[in-house]
Length: 134
Image 1 (cartoon, rainbow, N blue to C red):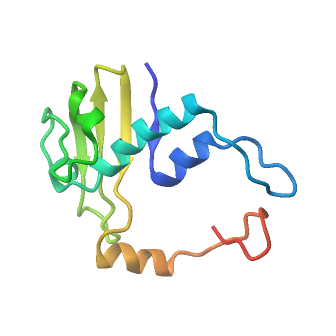
Image 2: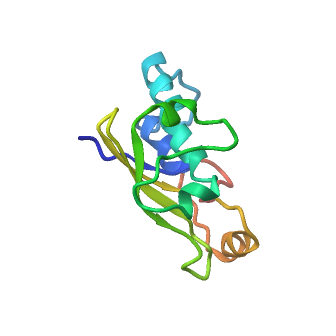
């Protein structure tokens, strides 16, 4: 069973290869791009309140219609979390029986508390390019 951890940043990082020096554009193989398109649907589903404030055992669903493959899979919420921290971190853990995966997804910045935390969080130079901050 695979255990992917999804956030937009970690999903994108999973597809990247060792950073060449200097930084340059690279093609993403079509099979990896297809996987990315699937897994990013779990990140999209983390913005649907019914998923991050749902009940254990509930089928994952998206009112926005942006995660059809996730909705088609036999995926149920195992644990959800929201509104339990000062920064309003939200997300869910789901079990995807169809794809034999456990998914941990975090909702990105959505609320005033999220944006305040983003603003106050210290940034560092990752050494990838001039002026880059992470």
